[in-house]
Image (cartoon, rainbow, N blue to C red):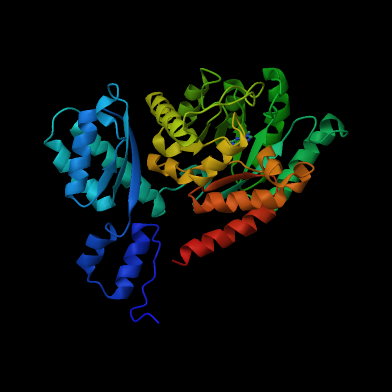
Length: 402
Ligand code: 9MG
């Protein structure tokens, strides 16, 4: 029988550490000082020169942290050494003045590591919120409203319009905090439609929903013309699966309207994306993509607080890629932006459970979203609103019980 009863506490954030330290009776100053020491983090860094990597290791070691380097680091080609830097948020802060005094690009490296750590901790503390235009809730369920002919087939054009509005009402009543209206299919292999066709499907529905519902409407489109018309009809957000790469004028529309924009990752196009997608390191590749896209969007006048990141589950990804993304979703929190996830009824769920089609994927969807919540996702794009809202309420309550 142990005398001291040691057990491990897995602490997620500095806020949680502070609560536990206070309960222990640690003094006010001690809480501030030690909360940042209670968390062990690992930061992946790439693009290092061998000499920079070695100095980084020495400095981390001297503070009680470490930096893992490849055995042959001195033989690596210029600027391609990678490292896993291990430390606490406090050590990453202390690294800044230490590297400030060093040559090469080390001052910049220290700043980037500390900034990455700060943004991650802010997200873990719940300080990264969804864009203000979408409401004040800490997490949101986005109901999917496809206004493609196959969604409400056999009803004729007017029947389709009323069926779409009715479906949106149901989703709002079930707890959707936003409705995403899309007129063009993005399924693998799907062909595009004309601007005129998409406008005709999307705009009347957006207009009707914006006038009637008390929740914001998002427009799921890659066409700037559709986004502009939908925003003028009352939409509050753009969901662009091309992350502003599809239509050169989309960024201008988003900047002019000052609206939230979801930047989704996709490899290829819906037509060809599932033809053998490849990554070097899927999470690292997506993080690099997001860094580039966010910087690009900001340079075009889109405010950072309006940007949402989405890894694009199923968009140019094999099963193992989708699973790694969900497993490591929290890596994207290092950008300090809200993360959205769209796993609803997607084929990777069917591959795992060998189901007979999309109708059998509700439980898989709820499981994927609950796991994604635990990894930091805060916007969930779903078909089945009530079920996902219920599961996410449990996940959120459990997190808040810290
Ligand atoms: C339109 N669309 C289909 N799947 C999606 C996903 O996963 N994310 C976003 N943002 N849009 C999606």
